[in-house]
Amino acid sequence: MGKISSVVFDLGGVLIDWNPRYLFRKVFKTEEEVEWFLANVCTYEWNMQQDGGKLFSVATRELQEKFPEYSDKIALYYGRWEEMLGGEIKGTVEIFRRLKSAGMPLYALTNWSHEAFPVAYSRYGFMKEFDGLVVSGYEKLLKPGHAIYRVLMKRYNIDPAKSVYIDDNKPNADAAAELGFNAIHFRSPEQLRMELIRLGVEV
Image (cartoon, rainbow, N blue to C red):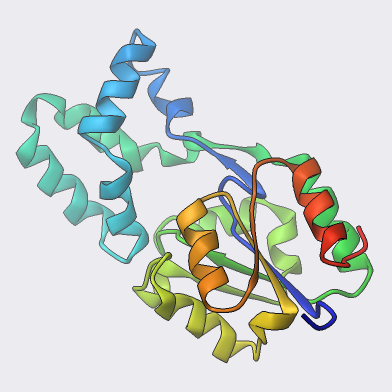
């Protein structure tokens, strides 16, 4: 491994606190109802389709036809999706700013719908400080598929052997490692800081 010359961040779960439970705890009476709804109706896999470029309106209509008894609650998923956004994950944003101040090139690679991303981009100030971003909804490609990582590498001339990739989703981190990145499976800001130090990155 040569000297690290760039760092690539995932966004949700690493720099941004995103969780659909923040919305649906306001909608359902019990935690059990929330968990059942997210496991069986508005699932992670369903949301990923929109991260890959499917339109909110189409996805919502299709799911309402499948689960008519939950039609009104399905409509809330994207109708009030901003309520799923928490704040910045402060410890990680502090690391981001230290790296930025040190002159480290910083990039983002995220699974995020092209319909929702502009709102998040405008909400979080650090988003404008990236040297480049690759967003799945615009590319119509999803992590952990290798193609979207290759888009990032080609567009910004990133050498994975000299780059760190950070993601809270282990399959996504594993995919980056398969392509030669120094991948970190993010679990906490402190763990990230220690992993970066281990890779020779001063934070």
